[in-house]
Length: 380
Image 1: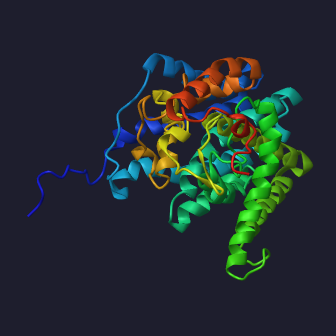
Image 2 (image 1 turned 45 degrees about the vertical axis):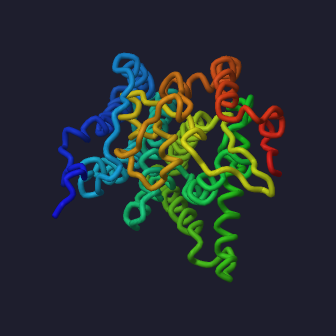
Image 3 (image 1 turned 180 degrees about the horizontal axis):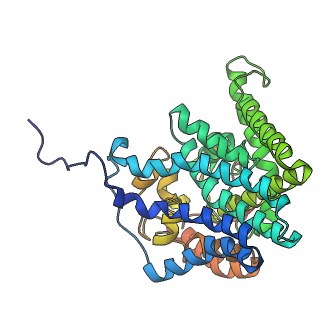
């Protein structure tokens, strides 16, 4: 006898429910057409990636609907499929252009540069976001695809850093990815590049040590990261010599820049309360900025529902919940606009510092001295 109070969960959500998240596929033809047409068209992929979705956010507003978090994986077939087909498509786009661009006589150096940056913006704003979704899954295929996407950006260690460091220590001094209050992006960026690499390697080394193994043991995933990155660099050289390597590395740097811009926004100024003896409160929705903007969440497969992602890291992207103001701090705009403002420290601080102070007053009125938190020294 079934319980009539249990909600009916569909065996498979229809394709139309997932189609908005497939909009990213239209970005690949834009990059390819930029390489073919040249001229001002080389700016279109970059403008479309952020400008179009920022405009759509303004027109469409917020989406506060939530799917039932108990929905099973097999009901999410069409949602999952976009993340599974993207890695081979991105591979063909990147290495097709690595081969084509040095041979395109109609493109000048500036046009080649702009197409390459557009390619990197796409592999960062889509490829790395999809890699993030894939690396959180338990099956080997999805994790491998996530590794392929991250190593195409020459940032393979991101998986180790994200799963072993960031999710465990977010909002504490041990997390290099949590942007500090009043810290500009331009100070955050070099700090996080170094900190993420060091902390991810240490995390894998320490995990192996607990098993009685040394860091160079074959099970260390850094061997996979290094091998894949080397293979991609060799492939770029085989396709177009050193020019191909430069193009590949430049698109990777653009992708990394995209990633760390988003990382800067996601937790800016938000810290977990130190409880004493090196312990911190549990991660809650209030420790990440939430954004319910419709179009940019389509493009970024709900990454902006970041409060729920940190609260329930195992949830697939369609099931991430959004929160109201009384449960999680809210960004005034989606990531396309917020990452733009993050490039300008004075404008960023004017927009976000009052929000951080209001967050502190709402959730932690008992803390009167935030100086240690501001410098990431709380509990150190």
